Length: 493
Image 1 (cartoon, rainbow, N blue to C red):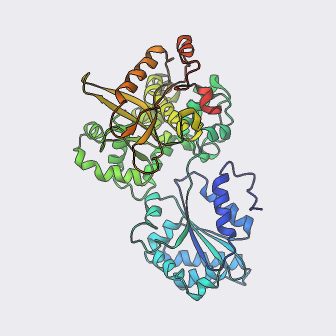
Image 2: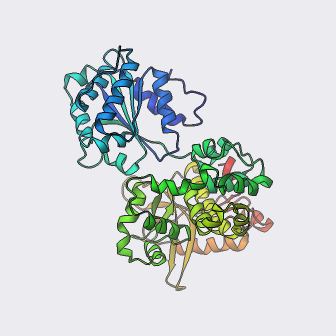
Image 3: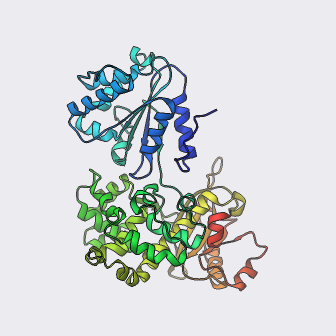
């Protein structure tokens, strides 16, 4: 039987199971794990409760000098081992060996939270850990300490195990803590109405902390309360959520040119998804954007999605809904919001919210549904990748935008990957037969094109407003047509 997950940890069953297996491993020899994720995702709660449930040792680092960090660690070790006073730790070599000594008699959890603080002030710490975990070293083989390094600086944490980094090959666990998916987020917020759940997710996403501390446990009671909730909880300068999107950039040490990064994010929030479009929006050359785009990807605020039909062409999407909401709605009216005119700003921002926030968010949720929740038989097979795409039509001298292109797993042996589905997604419009006809024409264009197996392409039509009677009738009994409304998005497969 595994380690019991505390009731106060919502969801995170898979993450808890992985951590439990790692720390309960009874084999001889100390082991290392790395846990990473953006701030506010519940990493600290997860690891603190894990240490407590296993009788382990938890240490939360702060920004401090090496001597101060070692002193604090020695105090914490003394308290944990019931020593008569602090443990003297002259350097990190002695400190790491002291942590290994905790696991001499049994598997022992050791958590070093906010590890980047320690490693940035003591640059040799990863190398010290590498040496301490050298195979055959007595202090390692005689220990069953399970060390977990945790941090929110994604680029730094990712670099710990990359390339020629000292700890490469030393870790037996590499666990990212992602935001809650949209279905889990709806349960977490207590939102049973899909129309309300999408609207809330489009602002706060799946970050757990935004439900509790950042809005004082205030959730919209129903759809009629949503506008008032936005004014009192999101656009209210007295609530921590108000400035959170700014802090997400300011607190990451890898984001030094915050003005440039804000401009890049604003460009993407305005619908400029390609590198050329972003460059034109901010007045830079496309070649100048390699570094800022890479940095924003590394810190987890942007994701690059390759176009399945155009080799070498990619589009960018913001990963954090609150950042999109801030760039589209809050940043242009920041002065008015600081003057507590949030209700007025919100009334004026409805069109921007619908077009720049809700629409793209709903598209993303449908793509996630296709990837994670749709049954394989719904789409003719397991889905490996889902993106948007642009399909060129040389005969008609035009191009067709597709909100959804689902590609299957590569076949055994040689051969193209199956193209499982193409789709149209709309937030504020009912879809009808003309939309189905359009997808039919695009599917015909795809037949025979090199690069994908297009023999069994499903047509996905997704709308938050539903479908016309004619479309429902035309799709009846047709497995190649998949209709997805907001209820199926949250409850069906």
